[in-house]
Image (cartoon, rainbow, N blue to C red; front, side, top):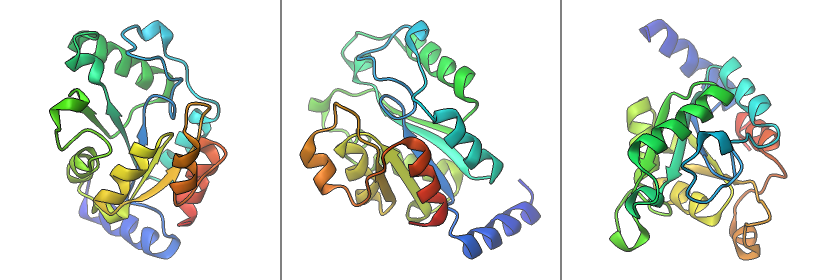
Length: 188
């Protein structure tokens, strides 16, 4: 990216509160949640995912995926299967600027597994944006907690699997992904 492009984006961002990046959870946010999905054929985009991503890309906002994939750590999903599923997500929804994946099981106590902020920090670093200039959109409380721990803004898009207390504790709750992205772009 040329210095001119960076300057233009920074000016636009300051004027319209456009985030430096929008980082999205994979399962339940971008695509339907299939536990320990090792089959690219089971990848199905969530309603409005394409439209939401189109807005971000049209405005030049960096996009990334933050995803806990403990199926790898549990031996239920191979690295090749994980790559194939992620490739299918990109095939259906377009390319992302960064992928940040935690392969650890919860008991390992790593710093990357959401609700820890490691994935947010890693993605922000790779995108050369400050964590506080990031919006994280997800469907569960751990997505919101990771964003908050990193100093990023968070928007929860609940699904039937989202617990009521996660909705109650979220700073911002959107009815769908498209609305969440619109709010992120407005600086809500």
